[in-house]
Image 1 (cartoon, helix red, strand yellow):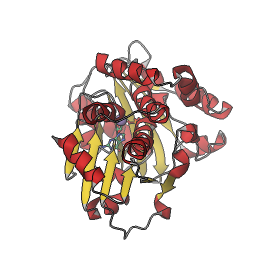
Image 2 (tube, rainbow, N blue to C red):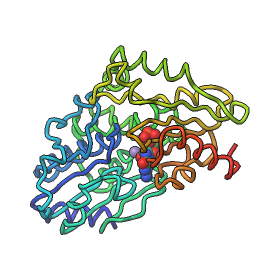
Image 3 (tube, rainbow, N blue to C red):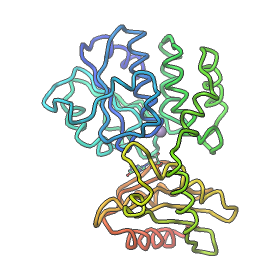
Length: 324
Ligand code: 5GP
Ligand code: MN
C-alpha cells in the first residue's frame, strides 16, 4: 500500500530531493545514491541529493556521488514536489534539510530505525531490516523496479556497512539473499569491500590503535570505553574527509568480556558525541536519555557536556538501568 503511494508520488512529481542524515554513513549515502539511480532508471527523472554535513571521501566511489550537494548549495526556500529522507531516524537528524522536508508538497521517510517517529506523509519504516538499503530492495521487488549495476553497488554498500560486513546480529537470511541478488547484476563484493574498508589513511589506523591503547574499563570489564579529543585528532593530522572513529567502538566490543562499548568524541567545548555498541543489552534506551537513539545494539547521541562529564553520565545511565 505505502509502496504504491510512493510509486504514485514519484510519478506525479517534477522535482524530487533525496536527503541523508548528519555524519553520513554507508547506509544513508548508499541508499540515497541508490534511490537516485533507481528513480533515474525506472522513471527517467533526475533527483537532487543533499548531505547536511561532510561525508568520508571513502564513499566518493559511490555511483552518482558527484551529484550530491552540500546544504550550503541548496535554496532553502524552494518547495519540492517530493522530498525523500533515507535512513534519517528523526527529523532533527537532517539538520536544516528539515526545512525542505517540511515545505515539500509530499514527504517520504524511508528507514529501518526502531526509534523512527514516523514523521513523514508517507512512512516506510521497517525495524526488522538490517539497513535502509534493505528496505529499498524490498521496494524494488514490490514495484518491479529494474536494478542496474550502479543501483546494486549503492544498495550493497548500505547492506554491507550496516551489517558490519554481514557479521552483526542484524544479518538475516533476507539481508544475505538480497545481497546475493545484487551480486547477480554484476557488482564485485571484494572490490566494494576494499573501497569501503581498506582505503584508510596510515594516520587513521595509527590513531585508532592509540585510542584502543588508552581504553578504560568498568563493571568488571563489562564496559569498555575510550575518549577522543580534538587535539589528538589534530596530532594525527585528521582531515574532514575521513571518519577517524569509524569502526572504533566495534574494536572495543571485540574484547570477550565487553558487554557495552562506547566512544565519546569531543565535538566542541561543551558538546560530545557518543557512539555505543552492545553485545545483548538494549543501548538505544541509553542514548534516548540524551535525545539520541538508533538500534538495540548500535546507538548514538550528542551530549551537551564535556567529554569527562559525558562519560560519567553515560556510566550512570547504564548502571541505573542495570544493563550490565
Ligand atoms: P554510530 O555509532 O555509528 O554513529 O551510530 C550507530 C547507530 O546509532 C546508527 O544507526 C545511527 O543512526 C544511530 N545514531 C548515532 N548517533 C545518533 C544520534 O545522535 N541520534 C540518533 N537518533 N541516532 C543516532
Ligand atoms: Mn542504516
